[in-house]
Image (tube, rainbow, N blue to C red; front, side, top):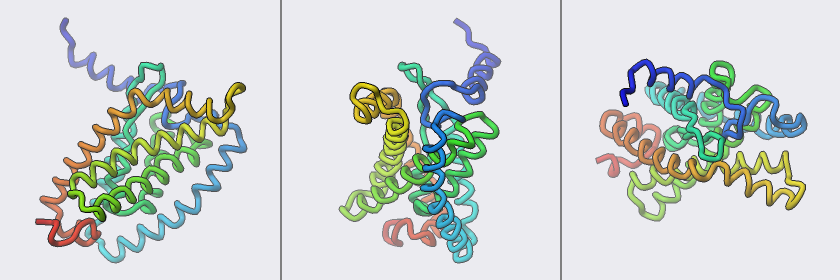
Length: 248
């Protein structure tokens, strides 16, 4: 069976740009009840404000890291825009937040991730404005915090740099989908079984595709950061990603 280039292009465009009115890691526009949409906005805003201060401090101290900041945003945008259909009829996607969390910390990623989500809501119909607070909390706040502390914890117990990065990116991805499942379960508890039954249903929707995606994201993040380790050692040292001894 011949598969021409234009068919492949059409498939990729459809995958990226056609809105998915199904359960997805980016909660779609208008899906959450108003009180929950407001709640997640209120919870997320303080992190975003602190993140702006963190980015300003980093740029003032190390202006040469601006390119890495842009790279972190582009990496998260591209990966989280790749909606992969699930066998359950939903869609899953990588998050790409692990890279930025390792490089700049979780507070900076709360801003970068929120900008990524805003652009996707406006340009790709992926997520929404009313649900931006909820999506930001799961992907731009919870995921990066999990990734950052997993990375630091792995380094502290003596794991290699690459293994620490892999675990950070993988578990940050999985943490995002778990938090999204929790958000949906809180907003829509099951009539039979309540929150627990609803959480089991929502998390099960993602699990079949999200676990291999998380592993793949971990591997890709290691590849990218090892490339940076080869060509951007000075910037990584400035960001205190690793010690001078680890850089060689």
